[in-house]
Amino acid sequence: MDIQSERRRLLDAEGGDEDPTGLMSEQDAYLSKVKNKNLYLATFASVLGPMSFGFVLGYSSPVIPELTRISDPRLRLDSIQASWFGSIVTVGAALGGLLGGWMVDKIGRKLSLMFCSLPFVFGFTIIIAAQNVWMLYIGRVLTGLASGVTSLVVPLYISEMAHERVRGFLGSCVQLMVVLGIMGVYLAGLFLDWRWLAICSSIPPTLMMVCMCFMPETPRFLLSQGKRREAEEALRFLRGPDAPVEWECARIEEACDEQGSSFHMSDLKDPGVYKPLVIGFMLMIFQQMTGINAIMFYAENIFEQAHFKESDLASVIVGLIQVVFTGVAALIMDKAGRKILLIISGIAMAISTTAFGVYFYLMSKLHTPTVSLSVLMLDIQSKAAEEPHANLAWLALASMAVFITGFALGWGPIPWLVMSEIFPHKVRGFASAVCVLTNWGLAFIVTKTFQDMMTLLTSAGTFWLFASMCVLNVIFTIAFIPETKGKTLEQIEATFRGTSGP
Image 1 (cartoon, rainbow, N blue to C red):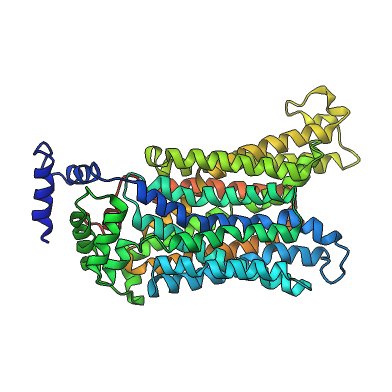
Image 2 (cartoon, rainbow, N blue to C red):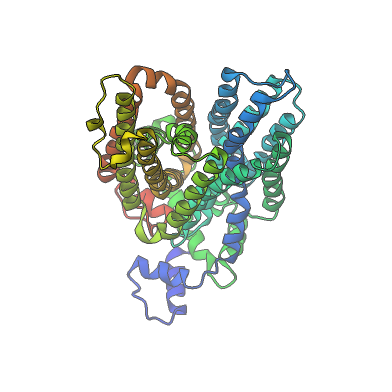
């Protein structure tokens, strides 16, 4: 169907009140007829993947203390093995990013999502049946692999299904479900042993596989494969019976025709490809260099120094803060916009990591024999003479709360959301794989070299390095990241190409 005649028919159906020359009026007229119920249903089915991924990330926290004390010597972990048990997931996830980038282009978003539930379930099954440490490692690598595929596929699946009015909200649900999964496994870890915890962790991926059987492939992928009729059926399911989906189909098709269907390395010279790729790459570097892993690493010690005796309950509190503020970010994402939330988030994290540096600096001074109480003159009460460590720990506790709140509001969910929005269709698999590999590869490097950084730079210096990275990410956001709020994926692509979108 001719796109111009379809637009005219749509506007006539609206009663002729809209301005027939304005693109936004056409979008508004179309979106006024859209029903979101099935879109929310499809999003729920897909975000069971990130929830599984949250269970994988959180699993090591309650399990490592148990496995270091276990009576069976074949399964008992020493400190080095425990470190690998926690961090080897990121190696699997980096490989999963590469695999996911290939899968989404070859077999589609829906099938990739269904297949990635298998290594989740197999990985947890191997952990449940583990007879030695290597079986635990293999299980962790497999669940990590599935997490890497999930972290690439689910944001793409949601962004290609959702329309511009709710894409920010639904895209932020990816990170929301990750932190819900982490908190869920922390809570379950209070009551269950490590094997039962693995059994519980295999439930969300199993549910995802079943639910995704009834959900459609994304219309954009179907159109890129020349399947116009199936794309219209998918849109009709997602937009409801009243929306004239031929109009949206024609608009997506027009954009696909403009950019061609297959990716070649020579396309990297095109500013419409390399600009979003550089932005996505830098977003992932800055997300890992904020210090999120370091803060989580220190969380238990900080709670103990502030006289929280139940350190496992403290982990649940940290998880709850993440869930609440990631939920807040999801609710305001389409109103506030991505850019302003990234800036606020970066500033909050810069302040809190600077304060962390001050905390570690003062703690190091307290341990020197010549220290005087004047070092503690940071509005700390006179009781500091009696309990300087406890009082300083409250500074660390406040810093941690501000940091986690800031991260959850912006740099937690938004890099994944923006990654799913800015890439042209033909490079979406390749570019997303680069971003996911960067993110998880850097997560592994930061986690494994963190202790060396602390030795080389001191604790204070390490956190001040993170603070400087947070300042840089604020500058980068202001200078280079475009606002994607309220724009279709095609309009975002056109922004980078320097043309007007369809």
